[in-house]
Length: 258
Length: 274
Image 1 (cartoon, each protein chain N blue to C red):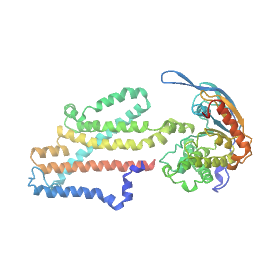
Image 2 (cartoon, rainbow over the protein chains, first blue to last red; image 1 turned 30 degrees about the horizontal axis):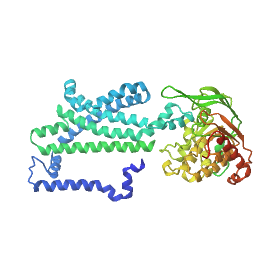
Image 3 (cartoon, rainbow over the protein chains, first blue to last red; image 1 turned 90 degrees about the vertical axis):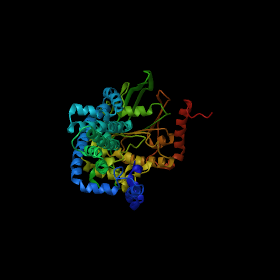
Image 4 (cartoon, each protein chain N blue to C red; image 1 turned 180 degrees about the vertical axis):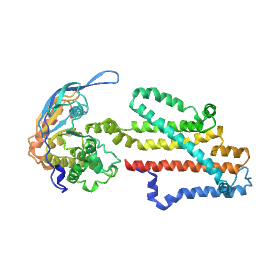
């Protein structure tokens, strides 16, 4: 596992390792900035990065308000997904009846495109927070359950036998062995889940809403305001990245504590 | 209290062993198709308190099964096993096990791995740190206590597993091919180290192995098992003086014990040339 640690590359080439994603990102932005005027593309079709950044600076109040709405939707959607996924995953892991009952249904449901449920959810739940949270949690839910179940099932029987030889209860076995051993998979599921929760919430906003970054983008599009649409997109991306790394940081803290 | 002496090189306290009585214990597995497979024919054997016993036999003869049954990690199909005064129904609180794989928790450092059973048994960890450190010093791990398992060699990891078992001061130590995954040289060193530890604690040890030399070198008694379904084929007392050195393995007495065991194998169609 240690070999897959992204920190390893940084340890080998400390300065370059830390700077390389920024350098690459900046290079892409620079090409974009230079190529657009050279190709005589209008701002309406594709604004330059500088135009987008300027727009964010001008309209930061609106964007910040929209971002806070979307942020809350994503966070709540993710929280609901975890609240449902954890007990379900434990039931699937500990009970063969539950596994036989829920697992096939879960896999069947996974093939349903959850975002396609968005219009129906709006019909049932209205225009407020609720449908966004439900769509967000539905999309985030599956990888979280799978992460927990697979993580717990990966443990070798011999390890459990060792714990038994020490006289460990199942409670002790879970907290000293099963859970810490499953953490990489569990957090893997969380990391995929949070990204999907962002997508789910934005889709929910596309269908029907009065605020949020998805709503902002949609209205900007309707007004042929590509720059604002891009500005909202940038804020969405930044939010996704920040949430991903928040979970990454949480993982590192929890992993150190185990 | 064992933890009172903090000097790392000092000897380990003696642990009282425990007698074992195996009475007609057998094991039958059900295969997936519902077929019954006899892994172990009824076994009768007695182990004296503080005895070092090895069980040797071909793969699949049920020697590990017998060990797991004695440890309470597997039920007998018939018969019974008694460890000390207690009938074995689940893992005996006074026994500890070492398996072929070290089974260290990779997120715990060496010291915390050794102290895991102390935590599980809800003993006071502080009382056992001294004993853990003395054990580590005895097997050359004193400079590795903050290292993590993936920073150690296979031999080192298995030493940690042995310390983890002995920190519990077990009256009965169960070892299931503990050196089976190690290279030949490390393996010899490990048997020397194990004897050094056992010479001090003198508890009851049951040691399952494929290696005839290892069994004779370590044990007071070697039990040779037949191929599946396993039965006791030969129960051989090893009257070699202790403490034993590696050089004993070229003595005529040692070689005659090894020959006796090999002959028993040959009579069962194992280790036959042609």
